[in-house]
Length: 146
Image (cartoon, rainbow, N blue to C red; front, top):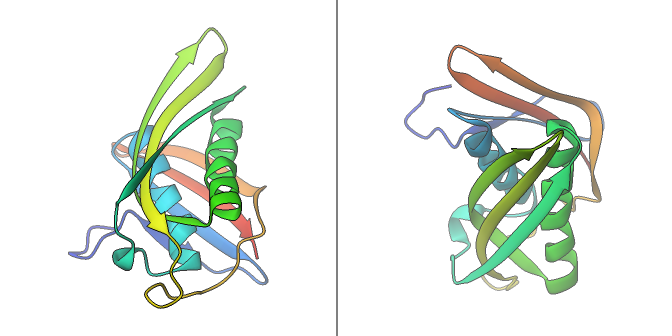
């Protein structure tokens, strides 16, 4: 988990789809790395310039639905506005029993001359979704339907 090129996520074995494990020192950092992994499936995020910022607000009835809603909202922004993202900042709060996420995503319009088109992500799923806390780290796992 701590290599020099550690991006905060890795891809796990899955028969048909993309199984992601993202991690960080906090839930926010794990969610940020999960978002990077989502876009890394679609393109080389190192080539996506953080020129445009989009503010994202989502809620969830638990941490799982919050992760799902965060990633789905980013995927929606990509599909509607054709924007690739490469940098994320997340702030999560708990209000009563619900969770709220306010985040920012930086990126730019897709340009087929500069951005590699990898695998299309159809949807985020709850399949095999986990949120684990161990040894001072938060680990989130989820499957992307491709």
